[in-house]
Image 1 (tube, chains in turn red, purple):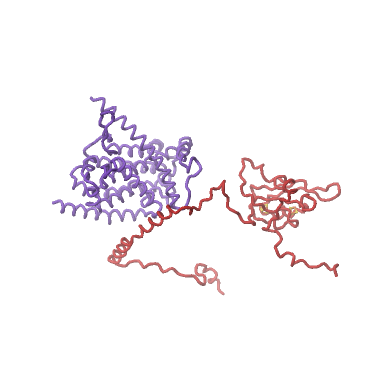
Image 2 (cartoon, each protein chain N blue to C red):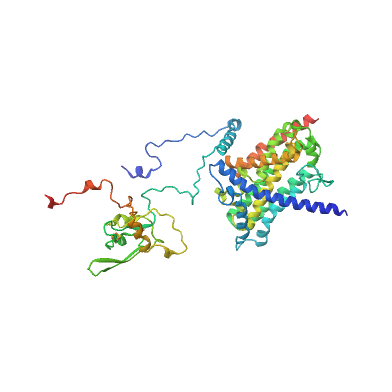
Length: 205
Length: 329
Ligand code: SF4
Ligand code: SF4
């Protein structure tokens, strides 16, 4: 295959050419076309269509936004959430730092330290949402499904400091206790058939 | 000097100014609503019932907005240009009879500010002088979109002016007077005597020219967003910008009055409907036509507009005059 075939992008296989009306050649043909268009009354058809639409009831497509909202897809990638462990209620994040490492726009910042049981503890977790491009890599890379995207897309505020703190993103304890924490089906989450990929460990046989 | 006439004229002027300005403001709301329903939207909904108070909200916004004058604009002209539009539009109304005569406390009121004997010429001339507003605004803004808008203003003026003038000539030949009151009285004998039946071509041509004069949709080329941002008004903000639109809507109302009086029997009563109601119905229908066309039709390019006006409409108008002349003799 030569290079030309690759660079010829405008003519894909199955490309249908539109045969436009031929341009009139002589003055007489031009006049005939103009005349036939003039008596066809296409303009009146346009007027009729909009008038009929005007008197039809209940065909408006407007969503009265603050009162009505469109349902957004479950995989939508809006502001991040940090989830809690189902069993203990503590933060799922193990402080591995993968999300900080992968983030394209370098906007996650994690500080970790050893707690009194010599386990790693996340002492600081912030995301600078001013720089985040919502690519979803952090959610994809997280081994614990700790950082995911929520569907909360209404994020306007007067101050940047209102966002990006761990306390704001972490599932609130009362919500968690009421069993309201929802798993994220989107980017990075386990697929529905994930169980079929699990192999037995050699110890079992 | 008869002071009664001066006082009467001043009162009439104030009434016309306030009523027409109010109608123009209300027309913006109607326009948004009608267009919205035609395009399967809702239009303004939140301020007042079905958004009626939107015009108050818009007014407050326009009046309190910062008035920006671009650094390199020709400042005096830039500042005065928006005033020209409403001034010309309202001046044109001086010779338009709005309603039939009526009597208040035994005093006969003629609802026309000044019945000059060249009424129709005066109205057309002054309304066209309003085209100086976009022209000067565009040229003083030092902005390329505005300049293009100004250039298109000239094209528009050159195109529609010849058509509207020639179109009116034929009915005027029949009536033999330029006063709008005489024109109205000529059609006093019911629907059959309306000039639209004897002069259908002139009616059509004049309506087309009216669309061009008020720069409404098929001919809205001087401020067409997709091509030249906002045309002559690109650099304007706040109430200066708003004045252009007061002028545009006032012009729409004037043109509607003109067409109704010239061709559709004006304010003559019909059957049991009094004349004042008749003319209100007619101008409402015309304003609706302006909006309807805006929702349905695409707009033309400047060259198409000149082509249309000079090569199609003007010969038709001349032909119409010729035929009228032959028939009259
Ligand atoms: S979504 Fe992308 S840019 Fe935003 S924090 Fe995650 S990795 Fe960084
Ligand atoms: S990748 Fe997940 S577990 Fe690792 S630090 Fe980020 S949020 Fe915590």
